Length: 195
Ligand SMILES: C[S@@+](CC[C@H](N)C(=O)[O-])C[C@H]1O[C@@H](n2cnc3c(N)ncnc32)[C@H](O)[C@@H]1O
Image 1 (cartoon, rainbow, N blue to C red):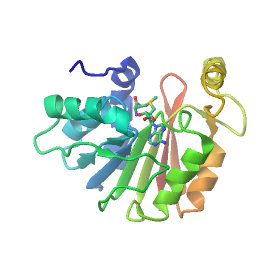
Image 2 (cartoon, rainbow, N blue to C red):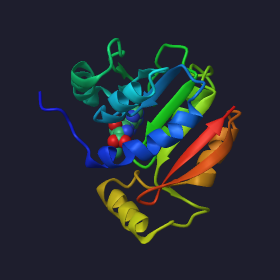
Image 3 (tube, helix red, strand yellow):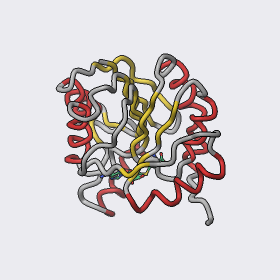
């Protein structure tokens, strides 16, 4: 099969890696939520070889992620598991969770559902890195993010750029504190939480 491809992933994988090398230095089992094309999954599994990287996504994305891992993954890399945040969480003792460009795609209730998993089946997760565009106290951080938000909402009224403070509040309800806000290229941020 032709592997799904995202140019954004190619552009952002090295800046994200720079943060994960430090943030996940002591992690061993990472769950990725919304793996999409699988590009991040194979790249981070290769570059962060002390980690086991478990990709996951909604059912329709799994064939593409699976094909990429089979073709480009590190030896022994687990195949992706199904995880829709509105359904039950995956099995496994994960100590870290990574997700990129998902919070503005899933509805707000989806982000809340993801955090509810962190208070339930994913209680073992202590490190959390969330990458994407975020607003700051209700304000867009750039004109391009404002335009992107508009295009998302036109596509689906439930999509939209979320507020960093809203995410931090949800996280705090499950014992996480915002350790760092990393400024990333193209008006993105990486929110690094710990509990
Ligand atoms: C824009 S893509 C990002 C994919 C990849 N992480 C990246 O950075 O390129 C959005 C991702 O969010 C995932 N997503 C949306 N709703 C979801 C849900 N309810 N549960 C799990 N993942 C969801 C999609 O399946 C998709 O993989």
